[in-house]
Amino acid sequence: MHSPVPNHSGIPRLWPFKHAYYGWGIVATSVLVSFAQVPMYGPVLSVFMKPIGDDMGWSRGDISLAFTIGSLLGSFVSSIVGHYIDRYGARLSVVIAGMVVTGALIGLAMMQEVWQFWIFFGAGRTAALAGINMGTTVAVANWFIRKRGRAVSLLGIGLRTGQAVFPLFIAPVILWLSWRHAYALLAVVAFSLIVLPGWIFLRRRPEDLGMLPDGDLAPELGEQAPGKSNAGAGDVSWTLHDATRTLAFWMIVTAVTIVVFAQTAVNLHAVASFQDRGIADAFAGVFVFIFAGTAALSAFGWGALMDRFHVRWVSMVATSLTASSLLVLIFADSMPMAFLFSVLFGLGIGGWTVGQVVLFANYFGRAHAGAIRGFGQLAAGPVGAAGPLLAGYLYDSTGDYTVPFKIFFASLGLVMVALLLARPPGAPPLIREPSTP
Image (cartoon, rainbow, N blue to C red):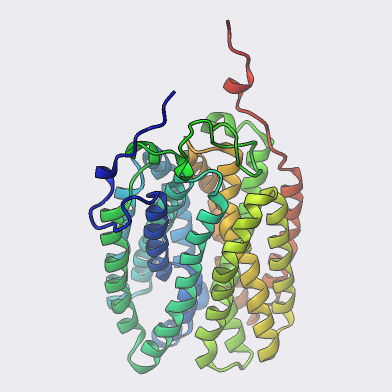
């Protein structure tokens, strides 16, 4: 059997490195797109929360509801979009989602009523989760097997770098002009860095261009046993139906669900909690920069670890760091403690940014990655989306974040149990059965 012949004519004309493996072009584009989608994520919204609340008179529960609406709809739409991405690739889903995000940001700049905020932010977050995040993670996972952890880590670096950088230039715009001007500026950025690159550079799978994953030449190279280093094994993929019949799938879904439940809530409310404790508003963007920047800087290291060691053990380490950060957050009442929280939390979310993609891909393979991840997000969505809303309404009821932060800290213990139980299930049924002579 001969190796596929690379089809360089299929590589976009604007891509300058024609003779390099185009998987890195997919990674570079996905990094840029992930960087630009962050206005629909908690760390950036956290910078807007107090200014919008003070200006419009909306409670933090009201603002958190928009985040929850977007998360719920995003999980539902992901289950539909995942099948489309498996069949046709991520290009169109990313472009359409980028246009929705752009329109949503324009709407946010002009909104007058809280229901408009729910619609615009909800629609933008839905598009970011179901179209952009789903599309880019599946695309990168499809182009890499042995180097998947490192490739996905670069995607995580893009996302977390955006979460670190955007608040730094948004906060001054809000202070000097207004939060409406900030949203208008973000609309321009979203169109320029999501829609245009997504349309020009994204492609479905390496096989479509006569290539193999990782840029390999020998077709014998592929995936190894689920959850382990992928060097030198066959490319085995589970169907959605078979994956959902394994304990490992549901334990991974449980772990990811609870992590999202805690992390998204802390992303959204940590900065406001520091402001409530008397730390100057001017430092709001700094704390987001620290924890998102730490996540970005650590992501490649996490990816390298997941390529070398079993992904669930590495994910447990990331969970421990996240739990430690929440313990600090509960008692943080000074700048040094706020900085310590930011570093620990950044390390934890850096690990999980990579882990939640690599867990599904390494356990269940490439061919149905979109459908499997989409169904996992559908199952996890309601619980994961409840975290920010729970924190917002408990704050409105008690005037303090202590109770929700304690709930999130305790919930991470369930993540550790789920990962311990998520033993790799072996080969899919059709591959496990012997062939007839």
